[in-house]
Length: 498
Image (cartoon, rainbow, N blue to C red; front, side):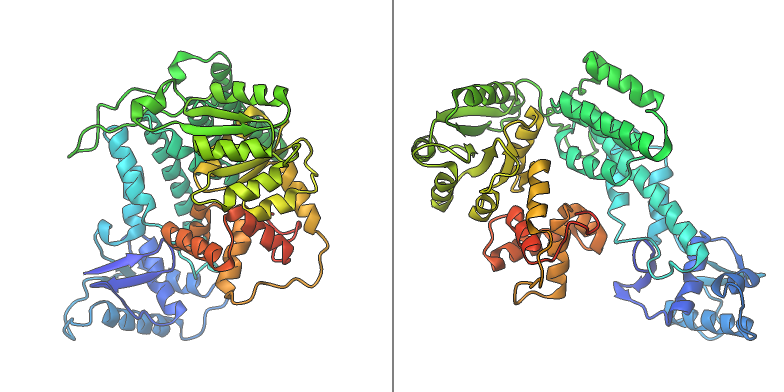
């Protein structure tokens, strides 16, 4: 049995072994037949599409030779006069015969276009469909018009699958896990209104009404800037519904159509009252350290209003913060960078040097604080402005606990400016070209999932490589990797995505 893969580098496999399909133009014959979906492609069309403009004089015999060699590769045990069963003659040309499940692009399209029975089945099938992708479709044939057209069509179906998966997950009440993927999806495709609808709805159901409205504002700006249009009727209605907290926007209860073979296991939507207790997940314990009582009060109000976060202590200076960390064992410390007696930076260093330390997020009043670089080098898991929106502070806490780091946009701008104009960039020793590529992608803000799609590798492989990089360079987290990239000139402010 031969399987064909076009959702990434083109290849054919038999019993798990990759077949030798010859040179690129010979492979293009097979790829073109695959794109036809089992229908016959006339030889004249093959010639025109493989040699656009000026085909060689012996194009017909060349095509026949390609087909003969491909048949031997695909069916090596076929008798000399036995009729081919895979790459078949179909006057006035040839056709590819294969089951839908044995061609990844055919199987993908079938899964996406088929009618599904309920969100649970849809979610399962979209996950299966998206898992078939290994990189850009028909990679290697981008210079051929027919391959470009097919790759564009398949990528459009992939975006549809991403949105159908998210919609099904939201219908099942699985809100929180979808937000990072939807954020990346909407940012990468800002003109897709369905992407913004799903992101705004997911944020709203996660208890992040301000972020939901912010997403719709970003959608409006993108549409106006690119097309001169306002939000479509669907997004306008959603915006009004969020403002009045319409009941129909609330997350559904446990789904009745769980996947076959198991009970309905749908988690309560994040951000609903009592979500942490109901799901058995302990609330995140947060300690606030700031010498201004007004700031501590404001942070207390923000934390008390966010389900799943508990304020477990307040400190007025760095020494109190260190003592409280030892006694209450918080998960996260929100630390003012400048405090009397012992400033926040020194306190953060001491806290992070202890065994199994909490995450530390530094706070400052000004984005140009001179201690920014030192704080990041110390290993803090975020740097935010006290004037940031509450949603930004909450996002920083959750990102830190998830093992990531969130830098306030104003802080990021200062960080980039601090390294602008550096000359004679020098990459750290002992790193391969692939290591440097990975560092640059991280520094440009790519998530592990986005890097995996870009490099056409499994997401877990990316996560493992990032972890190994951090360990090898003696760094704590991705924030320090960003600093290193700018410090060494690996990424500059003018770089795409920076």
